[in-house]
Length: 241
Image (cartoon, rainbow, N blue to C red; front, side, top):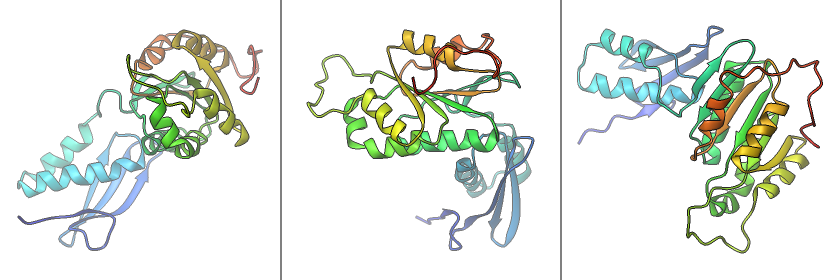
């Protein structure tokens, strides 16, 4: 079978030559295909999506679909549920939910928020999925989560009947490690107490991202119509209390 590579390498058939996030938020990806330049515009958030856009174009092009139709389709694709899904997006508050539960995904999601909302405080609400994964990838989780300004960490989700290792790292362990990295972090136990703490800490202008493979999205939904305090108002507690 013929193999056609896509990516940033000069040897690829579909080579990414430029990636830009415009002030309007749109992602612009420049491709070089058989010596021809192709510009793709996408509403997806985050420069990591450049490779996804390139892959979509490559597949369609190999099936010899009309190029302009493909370009328009990519420009109109809004993304998937639970992948940087915005529940609310205005100057007062931005609420985003993402299924990320691996350090690489978490880092990409937070980085995308930084790119799309420069200068705004990033508040991450994270529920680890399996203490075993947290333990095995502990350093990577800390490195990914430290990209946020404030991190609330709920108790790890464990399927019923699954044995927890004696050396398992906990949400408290993650919290302490993040504080050592000068990140405002708190362990917030269950989702109810996590929601309550989020309402105390989140301020007007924040970008709040719920992250995890569980029902953490319910917290994002609960904040959609909620009005946060202004940054100069008194907020109960602090991120390093």
